Amino acid sequence: MKFDPETPHKGVHKDQTDYGELRGNLVSDLDQDYIVDSMLIKGVSVNRDENDCNYDYVLLKDRDHLGMRFYQHKYFSGYQHYYQHLAYKQQLERINEIENKLNAEEQKGVTDEMFEKRQLEHDTREITNKIRKKMNDLTMRMFIRTTICFKDIGTFQGKDMSKLYGDKYSGNHIAIFECELKAPPQLAFIDHTYDDYINAYRMNFKNWKIVDIDNFMQGNHYFNEIQEQSVWDQKVKNTLGPSPTLWKQNEASSPLFAREILFPAVDKVTQDIAALDTNSNFKMSPLHKQREQEIELAKQQEALALKEKATKKEKGEKKKATAEE
Image 1 (cartoon, one colour):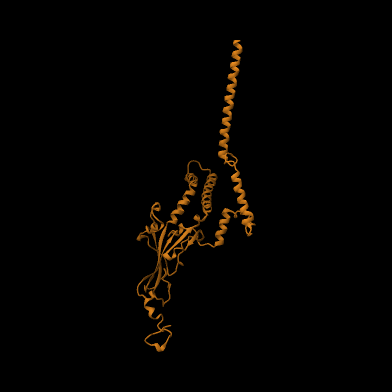
Image 2 (cartoon, rainbow, N blue to C red):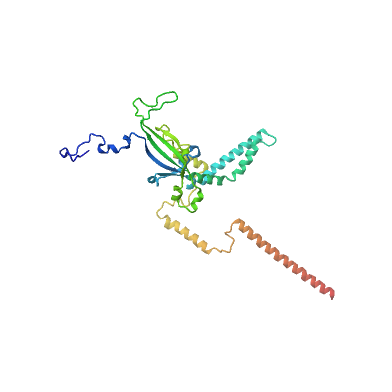
């Protein structure tokens, strides 16, 4: 709708010029290439094979208004034991596979499989540290993702010269580019804020690459696999087993749970702690308790040895006195 002050007699009427006076401000009418959107993506790698499936991440949108999207791995959300279990399982399966192969072939001498088995057994001890380092490095990775509209550059053809576009196609194309940024050292967190650290990322122009054009790759998601939530949950359940039963789980839904069950239980624990003899070894760990018992036994044996020595000395003196008489 439009109202023209120069022709007030027409009143408010329908504008026949499409977007009217705003038409000149539309970027879609530009005859030059332009950037549609740019965003910083943090927490995943530009190499899809290095990422996990989509439900292994939690999408944080609190910085979308700043042009930044952060994917947080569920390793940092309480699932460390799940990912450690997967890594240990994969390592042990490979060790067992090599061991079964060696037993079946009964090879003599040193082989490459033996070296691999020894190396895997050694690396198994470092799985926890390696996973933590991998996740920390992955969290600090960041790249810029830019969508560009190319104006009137014609159409593309397949390898077999087949047409991918219609005869009346405009020749405009939407392409998505990504460029991995160089992350600063993590030790920079010692004397820098989080914002300072983010601003310290640097761009290397040789890392630019095209990841999608005209939605041919359907946006080219960041994950190596797309799964349903139920599939991921079942995989976690099969790996870790069913969820543990909570304390007083059936009574927890009652509105009187806190007053009649929880608070009395806490008060009882507090009273037991207050009445506990701190000098007693009743609550000691097994190692400390065993050590204390060994020290006490050594003291008793030492006292017994001194008593026996004193008794022998006394008997000797009495025997000597009797002989002199």
